[in-house]
Length: 449
Image (cartoon, rainbow, N blue to C red; front, side, top):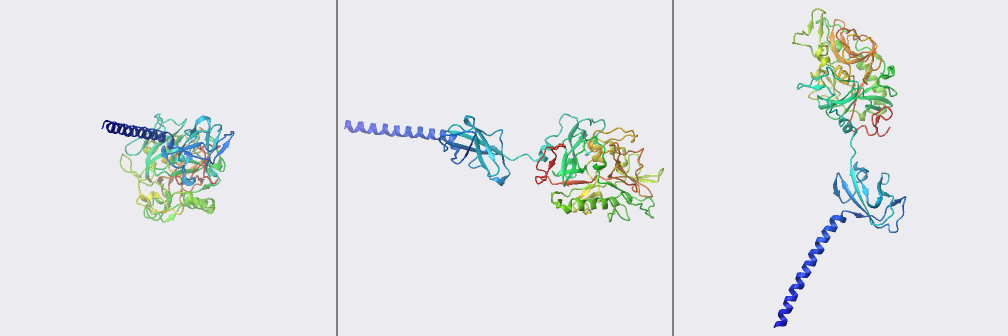
């Protein structure tokens, strides 16, 4: 009996011992798994600048957006290897061959090498521009009503600033910026702003890259009248001459203006016929024809016998705004709740508000020869699409002077029948630009160029 009792005790001890060993093995296995199981053995790899005796002892661990993954992302997923974070043990260097989508290891000289590979999607050019938003306080202050107080704002340097537009928050370039160059359709453009929906608003700037202080006719597509002389017998003072489109009545968008026809023809020849329209977005162009009312100012100026529009006011110069006040003035190809759908092609002109936000300002002497150090300077007087006032012969619009200033109240001599230079504006889709850094030597471009 004593012997049987002894055997029973030993059996229990053996069971406990076996259980303990199993637990130790399990814990060890979990530890080893956490340390090594995330690494996948790869026996088919390239060795660059090194030799190893046992090519079957190389292990990879994959992280996609910082989350562990069993496999590396596929070639068409949009991910790239983050070379700064990715690393290998023992001095080896991982390299992604984008042609055959394989990992090649440089400086591999030892076995038992582990490589931790981080994959991420590259930040878009739009995201890169938005990330440049100035936080130093140099940008103009935005009021609660969306107007921007540009009074006293510095423009010697270049900034990315923000203000609301009809689509959300817009990020605009201001001042002496040198990183907003775009090459599209063999032409150079400058980015005005990222629209609130993420699309890219650009303005024509020539067949070559021009410096901000360079005067050149090449920075325009030529000259055009804004409109012919238009008489309205019922009103005598005609508001239709300042319309990008016009009709017999105020804000009746029936007929194309002279400048719209000119811009459309250029677009058809240089953009549409070359199959580049697919890269464009249908964004609004504001031909602001809001009549001034209240605040001590009358929409009808009896002294000069004319109708004054919103951009006529000094408030427009000191407090520009990127939203369009009336659907009839908001031109697009396709109609929406906010836009009129009257355009033939997705192309238009810059507004006075955009010019002011870019760095131009009012000055009583437009011919003093002082060059404004902002990227919209051309040395040429060119049109905006912001109405100024209407007269019996058609009226005037705001223009950008040869010195780079917005035309102002004491020198509004640019009538719609006068030929001035033209700088068209288009909008690229948010993902259209793929490469480049935005400088004159390395402009943003489509991947196909």
